[in-house]
Image 1: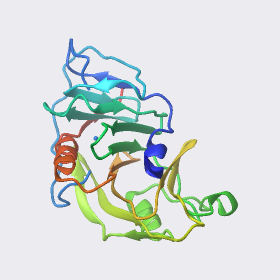
Image 2 (image 1 turned 45 degrees about the horizontal axis):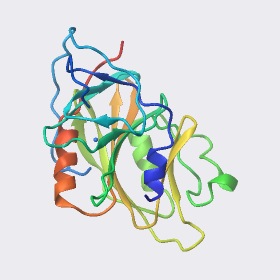
Image 3 (image 1 turned 120 degrees about the vertical axis):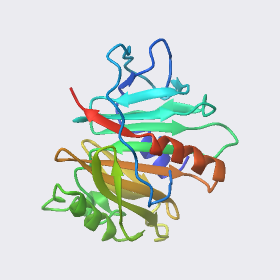
Image 4 (image 1 turned 90 degrees about the vertical axis):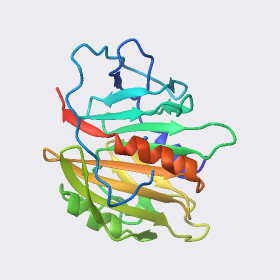
Length: 242
């Protein structure tokens, strides 16, 4: 596993509520022009199931990350499991990972990002931006696009559920032996890092004044993995947190 793989496994225990009653059920790249449609509220009869570990297999079904300020709901389609697992998480980060021997690693992260680093390759000495990144989607897009050691695509508009935002791709440039891992951002006590040459797609949305980041990665280019991630991302919708 590369650096961002380890980063996606660093965060506390992922709290999930399964929206399919009776199921032990169980996120990339996609067309930037596509939007994600909203969905009706989950059924009140659904039985929530909480907790998980990196060993917890997620079978096809509908899930909600329900401890963010807004619920993030998504589907694992039929035929995609078992293979998805619950990663580790904190209240600022929730991770889903696919790790099956012989298949490309892929993952989806949901983050509440606090800040970025002055020097992603020398974060211990340089630290985080001071003052920190502002609270808007545009603030974070500008900060990520300006990070040294990264190449950023031009941002494009998108929607997730009823909420609007921006999407960019970030690629870590090869900065030599002094930068084996480059830090993307901080989120509470956690951070996401990437290895040289790797790329992540970043979706940043404003949810009732709270900035939420959804990032995806595939360790190696793979058409099947990309299609699978597109299906899951296209299913994401939101409901107000309780």
